[in-house]
Image (cartoon, rainbow, N blue to C red):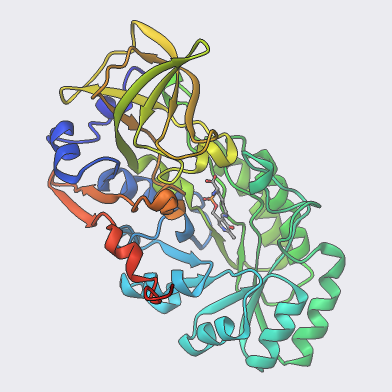
Length: 419
Ligand code: LLP
């Protein structure tokens, strides 16, 4: 593919240069149609049995994006009280929120209990804490199905090398705690890790979880977790996650379980990245060009503070070059290293990347930044967080978060008078 933004008409009728001028760079630009499309696609992953996809909001909690989830009828899962509050502010009904926290305090659990939000406990000790707080209450538990997958060891959340979930050998102890506090265990969930393009490890984990599910009576739901990948190398024609093939392979596994269990509980998944990643790009400006020891550096304002994934996980994000409002064709290429403006040698957006020859003043358009982009950005080097804008379905542009200011950063430091 020569250009993703042209292929999908990402900016609709808007001039890219004008967006950069109006909102400043760097700026996150979202596309409503793409996000809605992905939410619909993932909601159709199981059609034979009762099923809901829960958008995992840690990927992106902008309230306007959460509102898209509300209007698409997709449920959500939250990892923290903050994420629950964002969802409530977006108008998400409580019964469509599933709280899936890790190592939380009594106060945080109490908040969910008071708000009547169904919670999954991730360890025996948290289950015990929950039982004490909410005797006779409804809850779920997170199981570690023993199989993990993901794009980097830091994001594999099942198997032997992770803090998450209750291990299979501890499952009998769940029943003891449930009985002790008269809890009603209504569901089990898992999440094996983030970003796989081959569905097989996920299917293996589903098989394992359903084997484990047979040990629990009267389950209302079984939740398989998220992790479906998106093609980050789309300019090199990487294919989409094979959703249809996945669906075909998943169905017989569910059939066998339903026949054995006697009925079909509600099946759930927790996709974060899949819903939002491809629905955003970052526009950044090239401010400097230089060569150091034979390496050509392109210096931009898209630092690791704006998008941490490349420096944290060596993640790849495709980059397009934009000049005078138009994409520069991918010909007459050269190898460059694209960096940000942060005081760290690791502040690298793309290392040894083949790009069309770049000029100072060009814009770069960093693709697939909707998931774990803004939600992980931070004001390092006292650089305020960027604005977020949405290209709406009708082609209009809306500012959905203003750029942070230095004053925003300073006002949290209440003790300004100290010497
Ligand atoms: N459910 C649970 C319990 C999770 O912990 C996660 C992600 C998800 C669902 C959604 O996973 P997804 O469908 O988005 O893969 N910052 C990393 C990803 C960390 C994912 C953490 N948990 C990255 O930028 O690649």
